[in-house]
Image 1 (spheres, each protein chain N blue to C red):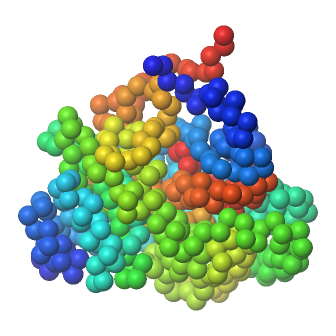
Image 2 (spheres, rainbow over the protein chains, first blue to last red; image 1 turned 45 degrees about the horizontal axis):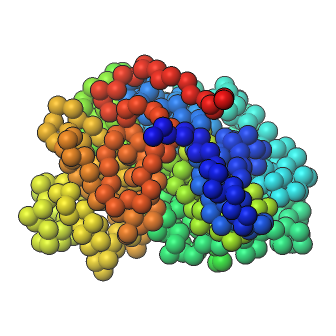
Length: 378
Length: 161
């Protein structure tokens, strides 16, 4: 039998008057990219869902396996393309660990600070689009105003705004430009106010509460069974954050808290992410005041040839645990690179979360999972 | 070499089914027989001293020169003890099949579908083993080492009748 690659709706289902199958996406603004969800509906209620993904599959893992180690970094800008800095950090640190290279403290601090800026930027993009999906237009405009400031900082330090090739194996390509820390401080002094602004618009907003409370509830045990990570897991009250559980870069030096939710619904996940932005800002402030001086490059070999072996390294990306599993055969390019994409696994929870909800809530739940299709499809 | 509590307990219980145990870059790893995948994973998850209750990742590596050819790689994490362990399961090419872990972790579903998609390793007992990132009429499994990196497949689109 010839396979129907588009999984078209067969006649029998269409003729069943009680159940309707409709497609949401791939070209649908609230699916945040090219996600296609096949919804089986009974009236307005969702009975079943099937995610059809892969529209953006570029074979990143295969490409990187055929490139030298250093040339692999820019490809990871393009997996989770709204959090390129975090992706770079995970890969670069993994290769450094394999090589046994210890990067200087200044590099670690700059990396930590920029990763936290990226976390805020990613959360702002999530907040803006999530609110827009639910119908709150204003937050989107405010959130993008602040995100723009972060992108300007990225441009000053890395030379680009989105796909930025932030870090090099063994260090950074340039030191902080003149006046950069002052610009960071200016941002960091005002972002707290702005977060209060967003909260003023949403947190006690009657419509927001109606649309997010008790929507997409997942218990702590289910979240663990599904392998969820990041704010989606912490919204259910499970205290797991790679920054605390297995500190990397300079995270062990800083004071910050891990916000946890209670009910595991869309509203709690919203609160967790809002609080995470404040905590990220705390880390940034500590970075600015304690920024060490010193070299910005370690003594890394010119030709990168890690010893034979395998290594798994994970960082806490804005969306969850972002892991890199690299197998080296002692050559100049990796034998196998595996990305553990947090949103790929988080999206799997969609089926469970939307069951029994209305179609309008599917939009809210896709928003709360904070997916990026570039990372899901790789 | 001093073995951690995880590997010691595993050796005690499943000694005959382990091909190798050790440490690499700070993480414990062991190589296990594929028939015992589910038992070992359940033991790791439920033993009160280990509690590896979080399935981080399932992937595979292709070694065309080796026999058996494939290695399915599992990463587990213990939320209570903040420990990570890696389980590697060798799989031969002509009988590329491993038992599924869905009965223990629901999240294994898409991981296993991706390994099937990219490497052509089947998971016995999986309820919905379809391709996930590629489409059904795609030929071959692209992350195998013998799949050419620049190979093109015909464009597919909706059938116009």
